[in-house]
Image 1 (cartoon, rainbow, N blue to C red):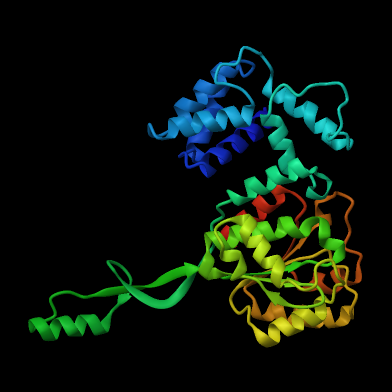
Image 2: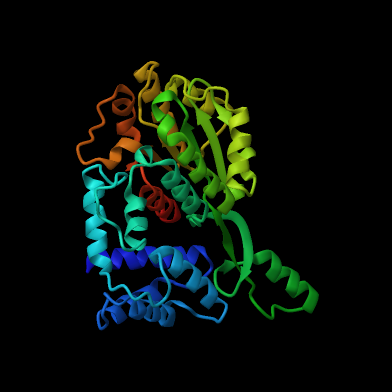
Length: 358
């Protein structure tokens, strides 16, 4: 049942990306409904989702399109295939590295394939699978944690607004009402440093597409830089609405694709020219530092003192046997708030959630 819940939660996430009001409460209602239905029957699954996840008539055509795409069939397909068993079958194929090969079996549904694809290492995907992951990344609508601003706004509750209270008293001749105020809030800035060196080549494009999704969701509160042998600001290029256009523009200004890695020197340049004060600093790299690890450690300590939170995204962290043994990772580790995986769509979704609640 846990596998069924994961599949249907992924379906609800797809619906939300398409504009359907499939929020958490509606998703829980769907899962409760499926407890009393035959999940082998695609028709029952279709109607359970339609009745619980859709809120307005406008949601219905979107729901139909997403259901057909996600489950690979029409709303009442005659084939009686178990959603949970398909998930287990494809997950096993993925685990032994044979997911991209034909072993003589046919996957009867697309829902499980999509769910498995979310957890696959992007470095091991085919071109078609990577394109699908990139399409889903483009629909990512991550929130952003908010911070208190220095500015104030009128409020019914809060601290006394002396200036407005006195102004009203002078205009009316008496203190008729005490005016209140409170601090406004704004999205917390995210500073993202993406390693585009040779060792990160299998992940660099996907990371930049994730960066594009962040810039699209909070354009004024996101700054992106590429690092390798040179520090290059690429926020302006990633502001293009189309992900393909944005990456093409970014690639034109990045001079050190698939080069070496001098994270210590690049971080020192960043902290000298720019600032991460009060921001969430995210470094996406495998930690293969060709420069002096001690320099990287020193600059990471500076960054930790300046930033609100420091998160390191390492693609290899997604594997159970990973250990941060490279010189760069060992130098950076004492100064990190979080070391997270960055190898799959699911990892980027979790990172987006982390940024929304940091």
